[in-house]
Length: 306
Image 1: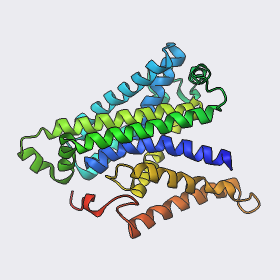
Image 2 (image 1 turned 90 degrees about the horizontal axis):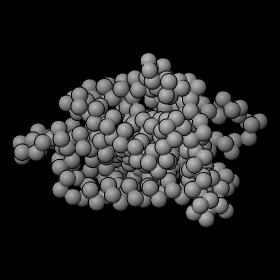
Image 3 (image 1 turned 60 degrees about the horizontal axis):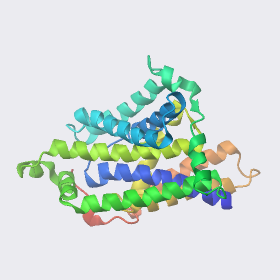
Image 4 (image 1 turned 135 degrees about the vertical axis):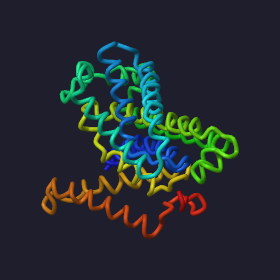
């Protein structure tokens, strides 16, 4: 039971960080991003490549990973933010899948990403810090769990401060009616790019922690399903709620991993996997029907006419 709780909390923390970035895009700015997994993968792969192939110190690689994810977010934002609603969704989900395929078989790229073979051996230095900090009594997962949840809190407070500022109020204005914000003399495109870049940086950090958790990198890990899981988490907790993604992530992964307790004589591994997907689908329907604003969301923050 202890290992189950530890596993759920660790995964929930990583996806809470990822959902916080998506919540900035959609919940507070109104940008439909269905390619969020691309920034997640960019952070993970940047860190893995720098550590294993260029021997860059791990802490530096963390910062560079966030910078690369930020840059990718800005590049994606240039064409994407000029689109609205369905068109923006189509473009972002396509970019996410293109990025995965480039990691897998892109000319001149697989030399660094190693294609389907993936990357390993980048977490050794990470756990070396545990010994130097006098935390040798902690298991690697416990050490990572503490760091992840510290970052969940730090990012949550940072976003709370930013979104209470005039900058955050402009983002909410764009979400509600960007034409009105533009009429007030605000550079809507610049604000959208800033939101996209910051959300991408947060996703890149989540990608680094995710890579540390699983201990390897492979392109097929970063499928579109990750983006849809994060959307479910955000909807469950409440879009435009500062702590909704955190609560949503804990509940989502508790339900998702609940099939581990089903005895094998009742359900095989494959059947349990199908049951997980059914449970997630039922959860989404329940949210939409009974509480569309999410657990911590408010109807006042919901945008009914985009």
